[in-house]
Image 1 (tube, rainbow, N blue to C red):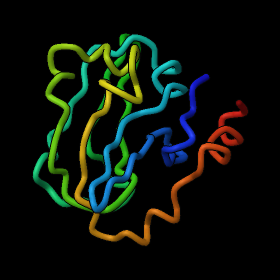
Image 2: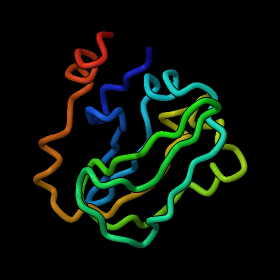
Image 3: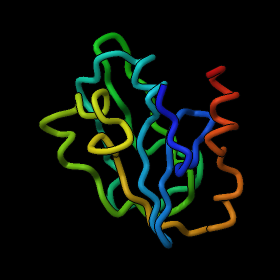
Length: 126
């Protein structure tokens, strides 16, 4: 199972890539595998400022709907519009074209609470 070492992770199975004060967020390979075939990604929080751990959207698979939790406080500045026509990108390329949102980080100290790839591997028993 792919768990890139250059990313940070949450206990809710989101991954985070940080460049300056912007974080790109998606769900992990493990999460998409557990959900199954993803048919819809909904993010209605674009241009809103949310706190860490607030729900920023949902991901719908054939058999279930799951909330998406914001890993870092900040303003949601971009949604991956490619997922509107091709939500299956979350399954086929969760760490690449399947990214979900970009967040302008408002509290950089929260980055320290994210998991390393090693800690995430332990969490999922990989």
